[in-house]
Structure formats: C-alpha cells, structure tokens
Image (cartoon, rainbow, N blue to C red; front, top):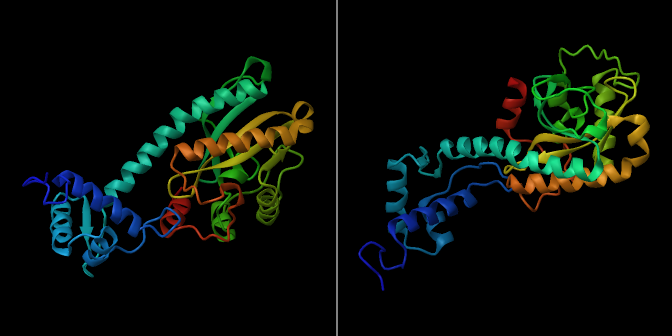
Length: 288
C-alpha cells in the first residue's frame, strides 16, 4: 500500500532520489563512461515513465543537497563529487583487489607481477607480487622508470592518441641502458601500434639488457586506462613463454578492469587511439 512518503508509486523519498540519480547517470553518459551534457526534467521523467512535476521536485531536492547541479540551460547533471568519489574508490580498489589478482597470477606463473601507473613521463609501481623463484631482488613499490622504455610504458598509454604521447615525451631524451629501447617518440608510437594490434605489449631489453616483460592495460569505470599489469623477468626465462604470459596477463587485467567497473561493452584490449579520450583525461595526462 502506498504511504504519504512514497507518493503513490511504492517508493520512499530516498528510493525516488536514487532512482533519479541512477537515471541521470545513464542519460549523461556519452557511452564511454564519461560525463556528457546534462538532461532536462522532461528527459528524466520520460526515461523513468514518471510524472514530470514529481521528477522536478526530486531533482530540486537533490540540487539543494548538492548531489546534482543545474546548468544555465536548465539541464541537470551529477555533481562532480560523485566522480571524485568514484576516482578515489578506483584507486583504492586498484591496490586492494589488484594485489590479490597479482598474487594469484604470480602463483600461477612463478614470475614477478606488477601494477604500474603513469606519472609524468615515467611509470611508477604501485602494487607487486614477487615470488622467491623469480630471482628479482628488492621492491619496486613507489619507484619510477622512464615510460618510453619501462615495462608498463606502452600499456599505460594504450588509449592515448599521438598528440598526447608527444606531450608526455616532450622533454624525454630517449636514452636508455637497454639495447632495444625506442630511440624517438615515433619509434615508441610504432611499437605501441604493433602492441595494440597484437593485444598486448612485449618489452624486450628496452630498460636494461636481459630484462623481458609482457604487459596489458587495465581500464576503469570510464573505460579509460588507469594502470598496466606486467609480468617481468629475464629474457632467457620468459621469451619462450610469451604467448602463455600474454594470455594470463589478459585474463588478469580483464578481471581487474571488471572489478573497477569498466564498461562491459568495451573490448579493452581492442581499444586504440581512434577512440578519442575525454577532454578531462587529456588535461590530466598533460598535468602529470
């Protein structure tokens, strides 16, 4: 039975608020997990099949609580606090869930596994699982390495376009101890394009002699790359296992991407720079 609080629709005031917020999130998503121009009261009411005046009251109440914002064009959108909270949750889950996934992967492969993120023109390790048998010494947590030749470099720039990549490496000298390191930004882009077609990155003696890695990108709730998942070891031990390592990395990065809310419609490993990133992502890349 309807009560005075449910407005005759079987939902409480809180229930109607969440319903409207959920609907607004869907209407203001451009299809790639990124916010698009807001929605009008009529659009929200039409999508929900509800009375326009009722939806208008709910949106006004949500705006008063700063949960949504109303633009000068009278369109409503989710307040940026929602996206900031989602970003914070993504970073937490990347570390907590990522650690469990890396530990399982390291147990399966018997090799060192890492998660790296882009930081300026470098990549930085944020999570690792290093079995004793891997023969790697010390921890890489918090350490940075030039992205143009690092194990994570190609994967963290997986969905960046050429202009973004050139911005990232604008002041990079492309000098490395690795005999196979890229010698220019064009060289890096060529290798990244090949990795995209292959579905995973292979980094062979680019950072230093004898070092070998396979890496895949990790996507977040916006459908954008937030990290790289890598298996790292000696070329002697890993090169012959490239296909096996790539398959395992692909499964692990897909599992982590799902845990971060990556859009299911997006084939993460098939994503290329043809899908233009959002303006907000471009700003963040250039600011890093």
